[in-house]
Image 1 (spheres, rainbow, N blue to C red):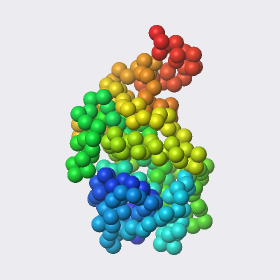
Image 2 (cartoon, rainbow, N blue to C red):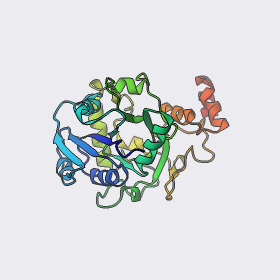
Image 3 (spheres, rainbow, N blue to C red):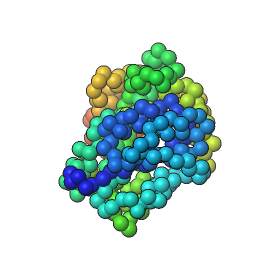
Image 4 (spheres, rainbow, N blue to C red):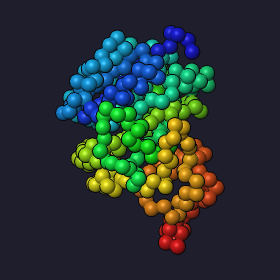
Length: 295
């Protein structure tokens, strides 16, 4: 990739003091960003102070008290369009998503393909019923404390800048923004479930915001305990990421849980990570699914 091509990162964050330091460390190590812009959206914990401890030539932090909406992340990008040139790339970052592979290599491959968007392959780490504790120690690596996961979701999060093109959250979500998505995805680790207290707070906030944001519709329980997934339905991290569902996973018999939503299963199907029998479940009618679950 030409040295003149730059990558910019944009992060909107609120109350992620327990994880943001580990995330920013990974972004600096593997992101190759020309600059990371962090916007604190009204944190009441130590998020802002921790983020400011990372300030340098490649990272800046500012307060952004604007009420949250789905499109705010993209608005922060285009407020800085004067810094971005055609052919540069920008990434929409989350404070609980840790980079685990170099971004530059993925961007280079996307550029060679003529793509203008890169999708995440998100390894989502869940609470499992095999946890020693549902507490979280921010001083220890998060991967040592939450080890059960599935790579079961992803969305376009990295984009090639073009003058005159303004992306919106809805356009990206619906793939209506003339996106040409690279065949190579960027693997990230997502730690949205870190402690019982943090998860319950997250549920409460998302429930409150449900009427204000189209992005909260996946909330289906008010209690953190309902997000615990049986460990046999997840992979256990052993240093390498495995794709697909655990061996022998029978979708007809697995009860609904946070890791096996229909959105998750459709993502796995779209990327070829289901077995023949699991594909059969996806094509079966609702009645057949219910009968199989019962019998």
